[in-house]
Image 1 (cartoon, rainbow, N blue to C red):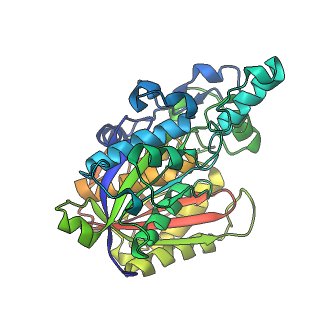
Image 2: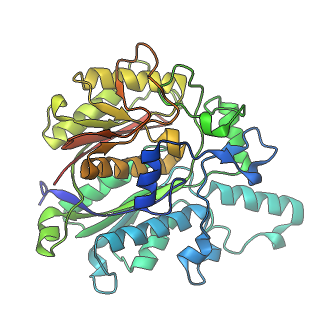
Image 3: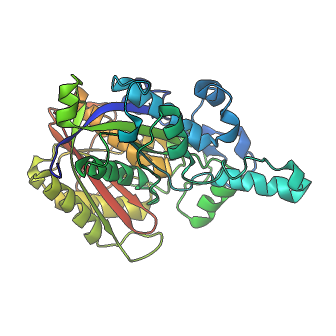
Length: 407
């Protein structure tokens, strides 16, 4: 069982581009940034972001449980419900002891901590929520998804900063191969659109600051890129062993063919300038998949729009895949969804393989001189892609690469 093939049988998304997988895909294909001024951030050092809008999360989650969930948890529950439905599974009929839940996040409910701290300071203990702890701890998305899905197998909440989504998917695949579960509901979620976090991003120097149209601020791989734009969202996949999926007549979206991870061990925020350890993660994913570099037909880049990050990743792409496969960077449309970014971008990579289209990078006419990579710009590019990789890199030097193949 350790070498069993694992497939994606379900996919759910809720992002600034759409409330489900199809609308998110359409929004990313359109190639227009979703960044806008956020009223709750008025007066902050950064007052704009890519926010999930047009949906009442409490109503969408349903029931009387929304009061105990932070925004990040509600997003995860909605994405998970979509993924399970997409997989054609019914939690009422499965053996919950054989269902694992792996939902990553980076900051978890840090917004809840900030909110409760303000209430405590201004109005005293009686003003704080009796469910305040549940609004803040990072395992709550996994826990609430497990409750909703009657999943009583293992549940985990990986945190590897902005690579948490890829880490969650990789761990879930390994659990399936090890026989610890028969179904894994895996992905990641994040929502950090509150004043303290946005101030921190501004102070760190990593974020694009206000100036002009917010929708033009995130420009991955552009000559004049000057920082990330914060986003929020969630993406969840249902993973199963290929033989199990086949027996129940499921139609896989993709094969999760390989994964690789390394740590720079260099600096808490800056990538190693050589990109050597990020390259090692990519090489490990290819070895795990049994691919050669030239087998990669598409790269979904981390592409944050930061000067150093994009330059380092472009160097990696040019060296690791010298045949110049087409590259996209969804953060131009969605913003940087932090801990959820890797799961969302993995989902988009699966959709590229399914639909034969590489989405364009928003706000990019052509990549900066000297980057040496083939960026898709302006309109989606038709491709006959069979194999693709998605990169995720996080603060702390976390490098994670995941590989998908058409089934």
